Length: 85
Image (cartoon, rainbow, N blue to C red; front, side, top):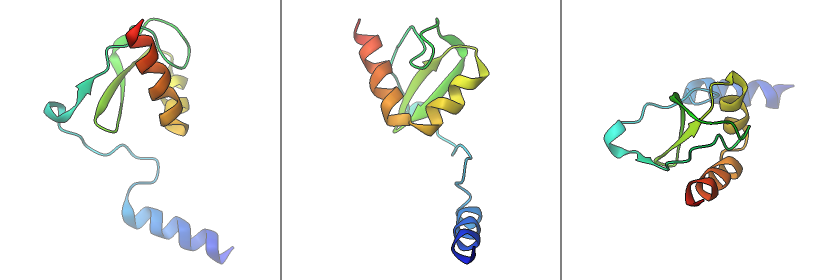
């Protein structure tokens, strides 16, 4: 229990637990995927996820951003493969 509280406290102090970090748009490269890497549906311009300096398009299903955030490397790889199609 003490370890869990310590981890939670450190996470809060770092202010990175589940919160998106601000990224300047000029430092982000668009991947250009036309299908959501989570659902396979067409992307919506208002729904994007930024990971490692790249912008990935998502559909307008609210769950996709949550899924992407839980495993960003997996979905980034899928999105980049879709963009090459």
